[in-house]
Length: 242
Image 1: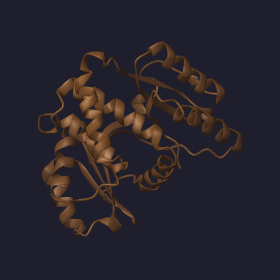
Image 2: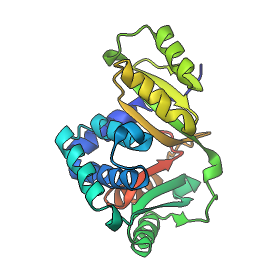
Image 3: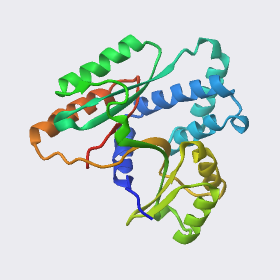
């Protein structure tokens, strides 16, 4: 089955995260707070919280840090006022960019995101201006070196659990799901002891665009670096061909 493996990007992101754990822990801490506020502090009864915990573990967040984050959120549920916001726009040469943020101050976040686009010679557009170029999917990446299961057996397990697609790459397996089925597929793999390099609901480009102009590449990287440094920003998606 076909698919576009992101394993190289996952490894690159993990290397960056290892150098800046404070950033990724802040991101996950906010997601834990929102998940607890929406569904309670018990992972057994809160599938979204289970997914965030899995993301935390994939990013090497210690168990006691996760537990403290859940307890803190449970004790401060009335004070948690984060909300999700999404911005869409264009980078150099029309590269599509989607920014997902979790903020307690939308004016601040919008100003920072707009500044990041502007400094990279890009522009923020209207809602929907580029999201139609992406498909929202649950995406699970498995490192082949960390998985002893036969690929065919892994594929059948994933499909039986509700996955839409399964693809094999030289160094990884990729499983795609409908966003509504992501939790049950991820939980099945976890129950079977399958180590996941990444497991999240993400935006996958329908087509990819290559940048060849060095100036455009520098400008895009400037935007992405500024967004990466913003604690409000949870995720950034582009249709750039790496």
